[in-house]
Amino acid sequence: MSQDARRANSLDGKTWTRHSISVWSDIRKSKEELALKHPAVFPAELVERLIECFLPPKGRVVLDPFCGLGSTVVAAQKLGRSGIGLDINREYLELARARLKGEEDGCRLIQADARDVLSHVEPESVDLVVTSPPYWDVLTRRRTADRKEVRNYGDEATDLGRISDYAEFLAALREVFGRVFEALRPGAYCLVIVMDIRKKKEFHPFHADLAAEMEKVGYIWDDLIIWDRRHEYNNFRPLGYPWVFRINKAHEYVLILQKPKDQSTQEAIGKQLGALEEELLRPDIRRSADRTAALLADEFVEFGSSGRVYSKQDAIEGMAKEAPARWVVSDFKAVPLDRGVVLVTYRATRDGAGGGPPFESLRSSVWRAIGGRWQIVFHQGTPAQR
Ligand SMILES: C[S@@+](CC[C@H](N)C(=O)[O-])C[C@H]1O[C@@H](n2cnc3c(N)ncnc32)[C@H](O)[C@@H]1O
Image (tube, rainbow, N blue to C red; front, side, top):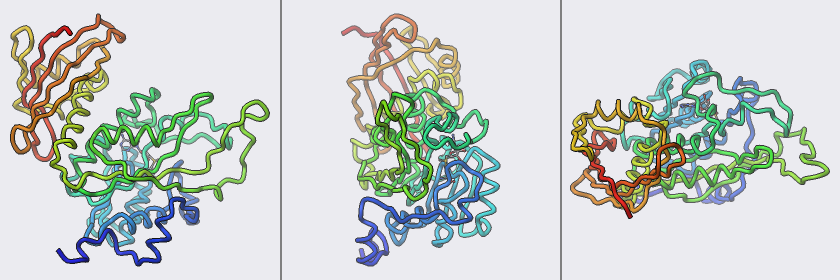
């Protein structure tokens, strides 16, 4: 391999040093960006710099599964790369399209749920992701720090910014970034711009919580950059004064996560399948025929403990009708059987909290990588006692 093919990026040594400093304070929105009608546009300058640092010279495809007004796609196009953006909001996509110089160089803007990214992007075809998800449901809440007007992303039912339960919101993001993981080339970076969240007395370290969810699906959390936005604020208030000293947040994080170079490592696949099994035990996923259909192969068969044999359709209908329950997975093991075929075994415990008495079962599933996406071809569960 030539020296050039091994390079991380095309930066000269001086620029490399400047950009390697962990706090970025010099990023500015352009006048055009300041006038845009979107509550959370980030500057194309930020994305351009991230692309210059994290996209190898031969990398072409840059994806943003939550593209909003398309800052990532615009920056990718400016640098002669192919940007692909997904967003559920048609109005934002129209405004994003107006910012592009036509959909040239393979740039694409797609109205779609980020969880369906694999219906639009080939597995292992993406060289870099730069994105910023909704910051939980904060946009639906009153802004106490700066008292700016509340603006949210609209009324789409699939808008992740409308999920009020934090654990459910994080699980939905894990689902998105699990799919994005499959779309990324081994060794490629996934850069996620986020801010921590306070809701009255509760502090949520969103950047750390999201990174932990992403580690569960196989990413390596490599590092982070602090994006200093102090210059953008001129109306800070003494939050909590004079009773509780509260922090005015004026920075965001760029989380630097990487798909392992050797994607076939047993550990990475085990993590990914463990996360998918947990996803399939969540009541909101079990109720959604679209979600369960994506995780079960067409030839799926389940041997139930009653001796009944279930097809994919039977299983989808059965899950949709179940009373919601909370399940915990333990003793998880993943054993590769062949290339793209893995046997997983685990203990599933229904804790009795969400309805129904506590119950334990031993479960096994055979997962197959079909068209680059993991699906279950066989499942069996047996009641168990410790
Ligand atoms: C923080 S904003 C992204 C802003 C963008 N980086 C920019 O510069 O314009 C989050 C975006 O996620 C979109 N969104 C919310 N739920 C989504 C979902 N399920 N799939 C795709 N996009 C979604 C919202 O419409 C919003 O535009």
